[in-house]
Length: 139
Image (cartoon, rainbow, N blue to C red; front, top):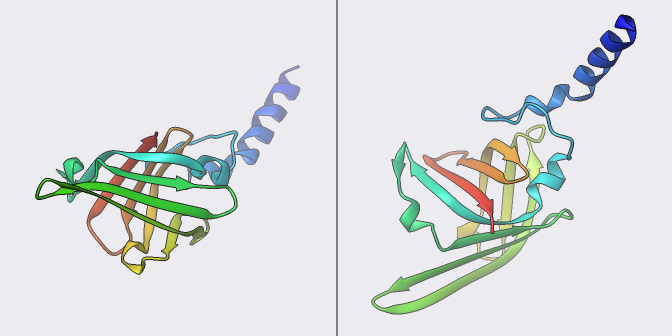
């Protein structure tokens, strides 16, 4: 019985060995990375070198599908007038699935982000060549 239990533990360890790709987790997940990325997200917290800038991003929403489609929507108010910005595009994994690349119709929204955390209910991204860190949660 002990041999069977040890065998199961070893097999489980090998099955989940690639799940610790991200600095902030998770260590183990039963869902694929693509399934975890595909969601309708909103900003829970935004940081710039540790300084909270969430208020600048709280109206941003990001919809990602399993087949690589992406829609970014931003609602903001300028001089008392509400504006909505929406752009469609694609997303894909880069660097052995440790980064996400976004390619939108509006090139200003394009970017590459390091994945810090990828859970069903959390997606933490850091600008690859910048200082902004975005913590997404499901809408």
